[in-house]
Image 1: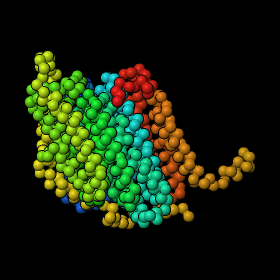
Image 2: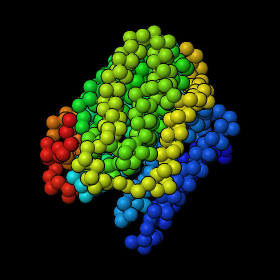
Image 3: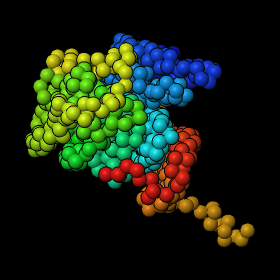
Length: 506
Length: 111
């Protein structure tokens, strides 16, 4: 190990220190003192981590810690994205968590620890580190999902998330064990090297079983159908500021892992996983949109919409090599911006204790609160995919990648699904633009006061959605640079194995 | 100890038997997860799946003479312990809120 290696995990180090600091201050404050300042500490640490990962661009692309972590434009792209999401989620929580909640310090620490896991997940190239990073991020988010532990729904959401999440992790782990058995290595490049002489790979059945098990594990985490059943319940039961994080950051990290596993570990099995993802993409879009149509609870509706968006995103995987990866990266960024934004609006409208969770409670929102109402409509427009928003270019690039890869029908099904999806998005948009009936207008309106932190969060999300829609080229260049550091199937480079002790038993 | 038993111990058990055992244990874990109706038992089924994976790791580590597999097992155990701490805490929270651990009755939210 050389001393420069620690620079390769600099954002993770900063985030870890921030989390520990927040916990230590929290423990040393006397009970009853306000803990809101800890949120600012966490937000500051996340901002520093964001800048440090941008600085990592100046490092030469390469690996550290004996080939277990990597820094490249790909990792920087996802680090910046995840730190940005976490920052917005922290700002959102700062103003919306109730003042009297004595676990606020733990909340901020858990969010930051979760960010450590998600960031590490995107830079890990050794399956052991992948597993640990995934668990760091999952365990933190399991606890966050049950943050409102005195309501009936909080613990229920947490236990469902926990049980199904651990179940999925076990599958991923078994997949790792089998690929270790087939190739004698758990390092992604070494595995790709061992699998390079397709189709004459030794232990092919073992490799295929491993691919399937790992896909099950990861598709669970990105909530693609048919592994999506936990999503609506968890999103409904978890507090809205947590859902803003939960529906974007761990998913971005899991998609990064999916890209890495498919394009770097199993590039030679391209012809096997493309049809599988084709089917999963169609299922996710259709199941997500059809189920969302009949939801009355806004958070549940958005949960199904996020399943559908996972489907649109997976369509990009049918694209050829780098163009598919670039489209997927761009879509993740666009999806994160608009989804964080809409959950921020939902948090402010429904309130932390969710007295107003239904679509009909949003009626007349634009008259009650013009700013929130117009932001809600803006984010909905982006989710539908209307031009000049990030959602439009996300879908555009994703479906173009699919067409470029020859999956024309996938793009057609995606477009039909987008049309279907606009039905329920527009239902919410029309409800909020409707002039409220007399009794609703006079009803006591639940309103969370909009503080400076949450205003900054909303502004950040809206600006990101708008910038991705008006001048997408900069992010597109970043995602293309990211894509080129992943090795697309056609140009697999062979790296010499790092350890020499991997030899089969004679 | 009878000599036949010692002879049995000295024979090499084929590696595939361990893998088979591991696969059977993993499947039992899946079945337990799907059909058991108590949260603690469901949680134990997941632990069984993780331990089945551990057995696979050790077997492959032996086959490849690679210590990596055994190290992996240590990490899996450690993570499983961390997961158990969080999982049991969540189960306690569920019990406090609902006074039941029956899976069928944790149903405030449904499709």
